[in-house]
Every structure is written in C-alpha cells, then in structure tokens.
Length: 468
Ligand code: GLU
Image: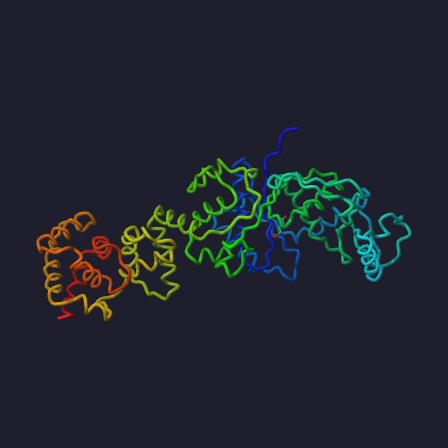
C-alpha cells in the first residue's frame, strides 16, 4: 500500500484565550507537516454552543497568524458538520457497532450505582436487546465496545499504552436531542479531513482509546497518535495565572517576537542535540514527533528572554521600529512624522540589552523627548561649573566632527578627554544626563548618533543655558 502523505491538524475549542500549550501543539503539528512535506490543517471545535464564541474563534486565528503558523487550508468548523456526524452514527448502528439505549434517567442512575458497587463500568441492558421492541421514548446512541481484550495506543511520545476494554464504557455518540458528542465528532472529522497524525495534549490520551474503538466500529484506519506532555510553570506546577502568562496574546503583549516563541516552544519538550538557537528551516528539517520527550516541560523565563534578545538583535530595524511604535502609541506617546526615521536609526544602537520589545521601547524613549528637556533634580549635582565649561568645549569640538557615526565619535570623545587631562568618567554622566534627561540611554557615541548632530548639540546648549 502506498504511504499516505502526512496530514496534521490543530483542533482548538474556541472558549476563551489561546493557551500557550495550544500554541506549542500547533507548532509541533506544523513542524511535522513541514518536515514530511505534508499538510497542516485547522479545525475549530465549536460544538459546545454555550462556551464557544466568535471572539474566541478570532483569538485563535489571530494567535496562529501572529505565531506564523497558518494552516494550509481554510478552517473546518465542527458544528457545521453535525449532520455528517449523525450519518456516521447511523452507519455504526447499521454495522452493529452501536445501539440505541432507551434507559430512562432513573434507570441509568440505578445502573450507575450498581456498577459502582460491583466495581465495573455502566452497561445498558439495551446493548443486547433486539431493536424491534423499542419503546417510544428518547434514546441515546452508544458505541458497542468490546467486553474483553485490550485497546493498544501505540503512542509516538508515550510509547505503547494499553487500555483494558472492560474498563471502557459504551460511550454516547448521539445525545437524546440527536447532537453528536465530542469523541464521535473528532473521529469523523479527522477521518474526513484525511488526518494521518493526531498530535495533541496528553489530556486526550484516554480519548484516544475510545476514539480507536469508534474507528474500528466504522472500519476506518486510526491515525498515528502522539500525545504531548503539558507545559508547567517554572515551579513544576500546572501553568496558571500566577506564573505570569498563559495566553499567546499575553506573550505578544509582553514583547516577545513570534520567531523567538517558535524557537522557544520548539525547545520546550523537543530538541536537536545541544542546539539552543535554530531557524524555522532547521526545525523543519530536524523535527520528528517521535523525539518529543514524555515528561512535562517547564516554562523557563530566562531562556525565553535569552532567545528573545537574540532575535531582537537579529531583526530588521524597520520591523522593530513598527513594533516599538505600536507599543509607544499604546502608551499614549504622540509621535511626530519625523520620529520614525529617528527611531529606525536608534533601534540598532540600543537593542543590545533588550530582552523584550517593552525593554526596547523603554530604551528609545530618550530620543523622542522634546527640547528643552526637563532635567531631574540630580542633574544639578552633575552640572557643576567645571563640568559645564567642559561640556561647552565638548560641544564646540563635536560641532566640528566631520562624520556623525559611532566609531569616529567615540574616538573624538576619547581624544577630547585626553586633551582635558581627565577621564571620560569626569563628564560622561553629565553628558548622558543632558542628552537623555535621566531616561535610559546607550553609550555616549550611540546616544549622539541616535539623536543626530543638530539635536545632540542643541540639547547640550539647552542644558548649558539652563544651568547657568
Ligand atoms: N478540542 C480539543 C481541545 O481543545 C482538542 C481535541 C483534539 O486535538 O483531538 O482540547
């Protein structure tokens, strides 16, 4: 039989935020599809009508888009396929793999208690009753599970996991109102979408056994299973609010770049030797779901920050400027039309230490200030008579600088200090103060280049007249 080409999918339920665990699941499905030259699909599992919202669907689209993990085909909406799910249940009934269960709620309750007392799962008497003497009352459709033997899930991450069939109850496929249940819908949709590999959170491992029995009942091939361990907080406990962030959108708001997230999430439970930093292309070439580790992963902020800093230092300054402008606007900065060019010049000079885009936004603020800068109280201490005289001479010297670039300006400042017979420490802090007004600023030459010649000289002149 020819091998079918790989189809993976992510199947989130649109009931709120997009969890970082869902993002990693999406990433692994995407990487595996890319690794094998297959397809990566999206299904919105919106059958829970009470909890599913249009906004939450949008959050998923946005989250995947931001992460750069867009599916290869338009999304499938599960709720729209209810008729097809019912059809599959009918097919199972016709094949003898399912039955109509007419137990009343009272009867079910009584059977539950009995089953509990006898230490077994619920079994309906309708399982073996002939359908022709059915009463005229509501019924559910249940899967007719085998009573003995075992169901093996040969999981790509967990290894072989065995379920004893006698512990699996006859799960409901259609409710009394005819709506399909979760497990039926997942199987029918995965089958119809041609999904070959189900890669998802290990909270669904038990469902895999039940779903396998549905596949068998319908005479379909079950997919390859891969159940991923959870992502925990740094303390090893289930990730929660108190760990800082859980939602994809929160990571975006905290100033992480999507490529850093991809690199970080790829590493969170999978790896390629000691490689810490790798490109998408490398991850695609290397990723195999069989190499995912089965123990829970722990979120490590230091590692994430380290990667994010790396990608900030690599990123195109124009793109970073756009992102920084977005952050500044959200902080109510009113930007002038000329500011963008200034920011684009500044970003490469200040990004060295930025762990996040928020850090980067803090680092550029000094160039955006309007003259004359308000100098903080502590500036007075720095701007004594002697220093003012020196800054005046430095200003004159700088105004004659032929090239306004970092290396020649550094050399010029060093030469100036030598001529003055002092260390740069004697006037450096004062110069920084008058250039940045107490805001964070990079080293002197970088600050001068960020500001540009005219603005730099004007800020020094302002401080001189203000202090005198
Ligand atoms: N809708 C399920 C969830 O959000 C995923 C089901 C699956 O991947 O099979 O947890």
